[in-house]
Every structure is written in C-alpha cells, then in structure tokens.
Length: 590
Image (cartoon, rainbow, N blue to C red; front, side):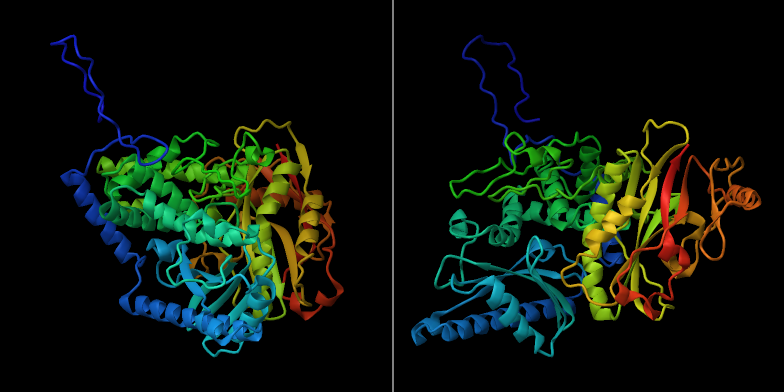
C-alpha cells in the first residue's frame, strides 16, 4: 500500500518522509490494486449476465423517458407562469417566471432499469406554495390531461409527493419552493444557500437531488470509477431484489441506501472494477460492525439551524441500528427504518453473498449462483398474512400504499411485545389472487424465534393485542373510504395460498427422516371455533410430522372477531377465508 515503504538504513539523516495516502472519503482505501486478467474475464461474464437479466432498458424506452421529462418540465413552466399572473404580478414578471424539474434517485445516478419510476423534483419561486398551488392547482392540471393516469397526491407523507404515470412512465414528483422570485434555469442546488428560509419538508425534498449529486462527486477517479460504480450498483440492486431485501418502506434498504454503501466500497477500492467491487462489497459489510455509521464524507454542520445526525447529541439517533449517513447538509440517517429483525435478515444475506463470491473466486461457482432468488415461502414454518381489500382498483392503490408503509411498525410492535424473542421477516412483495372478484392484495411476514434467544419451555406470547393495536393505527388512515379493510392471520407453511408460488405451484420439499412433531398444537372446526377434541389434536400432530413442518416454534390460534367498520361488511369480504377474517394468534415457544 502507498506509504508503507521503510527507510533502507543507509543514512541516519534526514528522517524519511512518508508518502501521503490519498483519502476519497472518511476511511483510507483498503487497496489500490487494479484488475488482473482473471478479474477482467469475470467482469465480462458479470456484465453479460446483467444484460441477459434485463436490468438495462432499451433505446426506445430511454428516448421516451427523455421526452416525458421535457413534457413535464414544460408543464411546470406553464403552471408557474399561470400562477404568477393569477397572483397579480406584472407581465414582465410573468414572462420571466420559471420553474424547473430536476431528477434524482436511480435515474440521476444512471442505474434505472426497465419500467422503473423517475424521481423528480419541481423547484418553484418563493410565492408558489406546496399546500395549495402544488397539491391543488398543479394536481388538477395533471388530472385533466389524457397522458396522466393513476394520479395520487400524498401530501401527508414524510416527503410530500405526487405519484402518477405519464404516457406509461411512472413519476414521483416532489416540490420545493426556494427563496427566489425568479428561478434560474441553471440553479445550483448543491450550495447550502438554497436552503435559506425553507421548512423541513422542503429540505427533505431538495436533499434527494443534493445527495445524488454529492454521491457522484465523492466516487473517486471520475469517469472510469463512475462507470464502475454504476455497474456495481445495478448489480447490487438486482441482487437485493432477488434476495428480498430491497425496500426502504418495509424496513430494508432502498435505492439511496444501496448507492451509499456501494459508493463507500468504491472509495475503499478506487481502482477496482465491478467484478472486484461486488466481491469486496460483501466482504466489507459481512464484517461491518453495526451500528458504526457508513459515511462518504465528514458530517457537515452549518449555521442554518437544521439538525444533523449526531448520536452524541440526539437520543433518538442512538437507537439507529444501521446508520447510513447522507453526504449533503443536513446529514441524515437514510436507513432509520431498519429494525432488529430486518437488520438480522440483511446481515444473513450479506453472509450469503460473501460465501458465494468466495466460491466464485475459487472457480467453484458462477455469477448466477449469487442471484438465486430467496426462497422466502420455504424459509419459515409460520407466517403472518396481511390481506388488504378495497372497493375498487383506485382505492386499493392508495390503501395498499398506506398499509405497506405501516408494516414496519407491526414488526417493531412484535419485537417490543415479545421482548425481541420473535423475529419478523416482512417480505417486500405484494401478492394477489386473480381468481378473486374484488380488489385486494396480500403481504406476508415470516416468523421464527430469534436465534440464540433464551426462553423458558412452553413460554407463551399472546400477540392479539399487538395486532389489534396495529389494525387500529392502520384504520386511522385520513383518506379512508368505505370498502377499505385489512385482515391479519396466521398461516402455516403448508397452508400458504397457491398464488404466492410461481405458476401457482409450490415446490416439492424433501421429507425429513426424523420429524419432530410440535408438542403444542390446536385445531378448529369448520365454523372457525377452537376444537378441544384430543382426536383432532392427535391428527394435527400426525399431519405436521408427515409434512416435515413441525419444529420448536408453533402458533396457537384463538378465535376472535376482527374489528371492522360497518361499511365494509358485505360482499367485498366474502371471498376471504374465515381464517383470514376471524383469527389471531398466540405464539408458543418450546
């Protein structure tokens, strides 16, 4: 490594000067080594796999995205001029009035794939506000356009956003009003002065673009390393989706989190190519000691008064389990959604990736082994099924989004009420039974005893009140409409619905040679009541043994009518099984 040379001892004076080690971030590089011929061959195979897997979009879709962005930019400019005139400004002011659209996220970083949404930020002058001008006037303009579909205004989100499809391209549009009467076309939002006289929501909206720009500046070696960064990030995003750990909303990591993790690996190995960076990524984060933070640059403070991430000062920051700090002021933890359960799942997946990469480097495996999909529905004996129903597809779109955003709180509540004895694995994907005649979808969470947790034999955890609390919070949705409802049920592995499996067929599982039947089970009759019959209990045990699903953890169902709004009782729920509508659960760990 640079700076490691020793003096040869030929002369006592003068003292040797150590060569300066160039730092690209907070940490010094681990290695400056470039690729060998073997690395280059592996890199060619990796890039070929990515192309064959469809992570790159075609030229036609790229051109369509560019056209959509041009069209959206013009709509924003016309909207700002219209408001300027309506607010009584002079014609000269109307002529000079301007709004601009900037991109961030995967599109700005150059790693978006086919059918990906475009994260966009609309920047307007100080007299154009978010509450009325953006979420009412611009919303109504978009609503009246034929090119726009599935328009959703989410004004109460942590970062207020309008979601819609424009000519089939999904758009997430944020708004920021800056302290300028006229917004220049070449506005430099990287400078902190753009944050003067803005509120927290505006800062969060602006920081999407500011963080993306900073990431690209902090990746070393400019063009060559930017290309390596982009390819590596595409690869890791594809891997995360295949392994079920790509979702910020459910407590895993989203696009900006993965970008920051990859960018740090690029800083640690500045001359590495993607095949090397992917391997080093898993090596670094398999051994990373969370909650030590990942930072691309020192945390910057300013006199603007916004709080920055600082666990020494803020008690809430000390609770963060996997801090990944954004490099733009005000520096924040981008992964505050991560829970103990989801961190455990991600660390397991890092270990999986590291093991496969070690096999690849020994020529015992190929890249396809790294991207084997996570067999989530074969990994647990017990699951929670969260069914979401609505009166129509439009209502389901907003209702599903709300429920999905609350799922991480169900994970936290279960961790809290079982004193972290029960581990929850929320799966990011939603599933739907196309044979059902109503609008619905379902989410699933895997349940198991926390590895290494010390529990007393036959220790029982009743989580009915936990689920009731979760349902109560979900049903407080501000935009609730008749027909929106949620049902939570316990489902054993062998009883999972067929529609969650590819082509509706579950894989054949190998029967264990020495099955260990559960010591505590229960059953219910056709009307949904708990049956005390010992004969049925015995049959249930035998059934579990033959399916190889018994184990140290089992869930005991208890009948309880699901609290529902009166408006939702009726045909819309008739397609759901009694188990979904009427059962809660008691966890028994033995």
